[in-house]
Length: 195
Image (cartoon, rainbow, N blue to C red):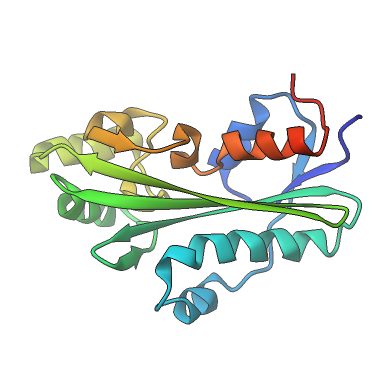
């Protein structure tokens, strides 16, 4: 079976780069989802927030493109029972990393896929433990990777991996933003060619 039209319901350059590696033909469409409103609604069930956001993003694009295979994804950082928005400046990234260093936080990364009445959703929880870092190390890192717009203030696919001394996850690709292991498992389940 050939692939249907594929739409990535995201404008994230990181997710786009992840998918491009597999030479799949796809387009990107920005989903119409009020993330701030949904975050407020899920304050009492933060562990379900990323799944709900991924599903809403997927649905908002799928409803306008019923023949396409639509992939939505979302990532939420949980630390001390709070979610964090993405840092918008170097100063914010340094502040976030200073709070996270030497401690463990969780990345909840969800993927939702819709295709012709089929629905798939899965959440990967990654426990990320950082080295104890000096302020100079944190500043050096932020100057190298410029991780603004990234959950936690780090780019795991670049020098950000050097910040950590322990990672517990069932899918390392989820840390970047798009969980590829469950995505390709869904494709196999739906008899789409993978290899």
